[in-house]
Amino acid sequence: MADKTDCQKPDKASIHIIGMTCTTCAATIEKGLSETPGVEQVNVNFASEQASIKYDPAKVDLAKIRDTVSQLGYGVATRKSIFPVVGMTCASCVARVEEALSSVPGVVSASVNLASEKATVEYLEGARLYNPFMFQVLG
Image (tube, rainbow, N blue to C red; front, side, top):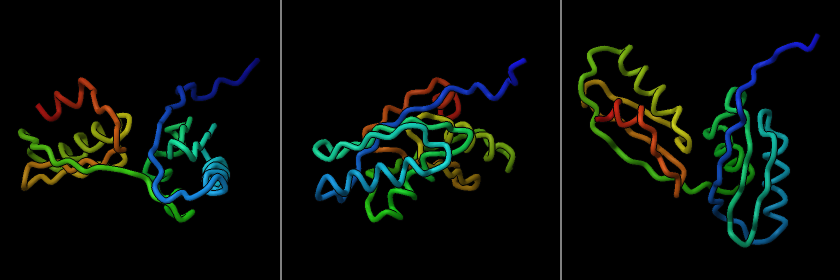
């Protein structure tokens, strides 16, 4: 009988890479990311400066992928936005909002401040951050 394992679907990300100067750079990034646990498939295109990545979000997140690219000597184009968040009353609320924001595809990191009622979200440049739950959290 086959052992049932976690059947979570892999996520896909298209990441704008900064700092490549040749195809060897693309190959270096491809090799480095493919050796990262949880990364299932990588294709880096030097001409478009894009890395297409298929990964298991249970094993690796976009922050780790960004950090790996950085350790290889390149950058990942991200943006930061600050959103108001109202109705939070405790640290547990903050944790739930951070978890919800972090689960949105394209989000690299999310930090929520209870006192200022603001969320700072770092996300991949060009990512479409539509998630109905996100709007409930932020709405």
